[in-house]
Image 1: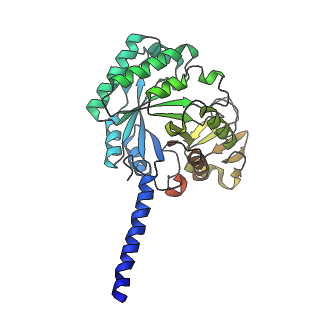
Image 2: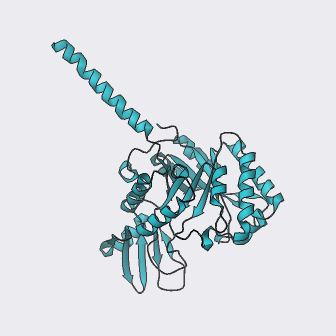
Image 3: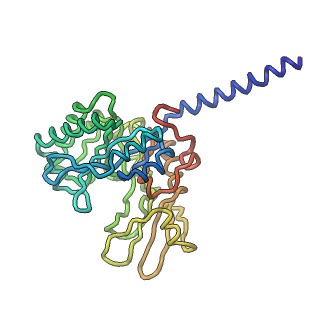
Length: 335
């Protein structure tokens, strides 16, 4: 009896461990970490997320080609060294902001669309990218058809097995201006994932307020779920601070660590917003989204059955621990 009991105990333990491993592998929820094309930033944060989106390519001013940032391939290598797949973000960023003019020159010109799609496909094939994320922002209603055509061209040009995602703004008004350039159901037919950027409720050039108040996030999520299936959707989650300085200058972007240090004992948790807030005197006002804030938004995404969450950004946010993520952070292969 004693020998049989001794044998039974490891068998039971092995079964329990196998069940726990299966449950872990069955958890499909992804945590994407966005990062600048900076190898050090990627190396510090890549192991804490499922995959990395590297902000490393922009569209030229005339809309005809891509321009990649220095150290981009070193950043890709850092992600792969951590065992994480990496996607290249393509943006229309020019002169310090997302440019409607650059977006227009790309999206309304068939030649430019084909050229940029081909260049991205070559970059993916030559450098070994695992995916591409289209992050074209601040565009207009007249770009709607061109954006769909560009995504279709890009899907056709990319090597087989390359993931293709798109970032779209959050809104609580499906008929408002924010989504006029985005034919969401059609775009969703041609991409793997749609990330709704549920932040910038209060933006750097506007009045102070929460970066992404949790009630606004809930309403925005409900709105987009009428257009995109939850299993294809990822929730963009902020991990930074905005310091409005009481004058006409845009709010200053701070890391969460910088914001926490600046606020000190003046920081107050806003239950309504699920963010930290501090009034610093002389008209200065600070809002920041830390690990506690991220945890609540990720829990919201999990509860809605989304494919995952996407954190902007690794170089600014608190560390993404399993507690923040609501469970183990798995790689794309489920390990």
